[in-house]
Image (cartoon, helix red, strand yellow):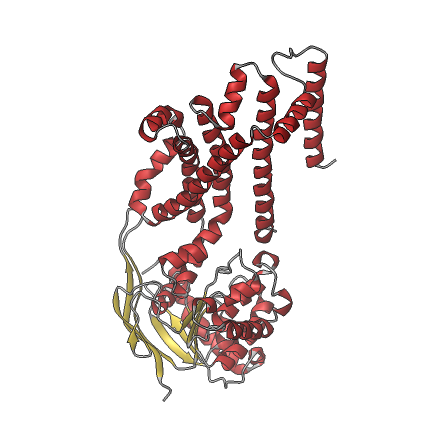
Length: 248
Length: 265
């Protein structure tokens, strides 16, 4: 069996175990419904369509937060890398950044920006941004000096050197930041919706939880998991294809 | 008299003191003329400043004192137009295939696509890389990757080609063969070539003239005219003259190499 098949078998075994435990009363229906019912309800939710506005809203906000974190993170990472004293100043802050509970600022963001989508996007963006910056810096640190000399021999300016030599070289490292940004955007946006929002998947999951509505809560959780895992797998396959060109 | 292509006058390079080390006088003073379309080889003990010399001529580094002129124009810390450099380390771009690697420099110019395609195809053929046109550097041997870098330089038709031990990592047989290829390319391009090497055999086989450098700070101890005609190749290694040249090179370098090893002044 390949490692992939083992993983699949493990996941299937876990689902079957949960199914058995719920069917035979070891898990209270009040706590969790069987996985087969979760899938059944998920199908119904997706067909009936009343959750689609929430799904579209959340996924749009996740995408905006993620793309913004990647674009701004790569640009800032490149600028900071070129500016040594700024790098030395910011490095310790980057190291401490994830010790700061970004959610603590959420109420402040709502006061400043209101109850719209922006505070949620901002939380997702803030969580992903530093991961992209740090990994961009890491990638740019690893560009061999000989490639920088080659760029100078080709008489490339700083912008062309970044776009055509250093950033392409750093792409595998930046990819690590991108994958983290995807995960953090989901966590940031859905987490913020759970705390304080009137729409979105996070809000719907929280609402169902408060009303003991397991037939909505679990299917939505599974939906979020499926979307996040699919996006992650797509990035993983893309990365694998890219790395195959670079490594033996 | 052959016209001078690159002229160095009193070139020195001093690396200032830092927290990690004392001030290092790396090079010079050096006076040197590279003649148009000649094949000039520089040999010298390790750490004598050969690569520093190349970087100053290429405009990658600035001389602490002295001047470098290329075609009469001063070179001062900026890479002039018409120069190509091949480094000892692998400088192929790992994210580009062989064709895109070779075309890289040309695509930064206003040259039209058809001409770029023609030049790249010619270079692929010349370097024996045609069947690897779509391969990525990771799929190639070290020697092939160096050929890609050489091709990337040659397609731009530089008037001065600086080679910093491009075959340093290759075995002796491949080096001789690459040397033959290099001579062929030099004859075809008509460029002025300066090659840095550790190998006395390579120097004796390839050069019109050999500049022998002293231990650090590197100065030109002697310039040896090999007297080879243009149609030379690796076969010259079997001639008595080849033996004479390598013997003279070793005579000059033995003491210098010892000085470099012991760090004696």
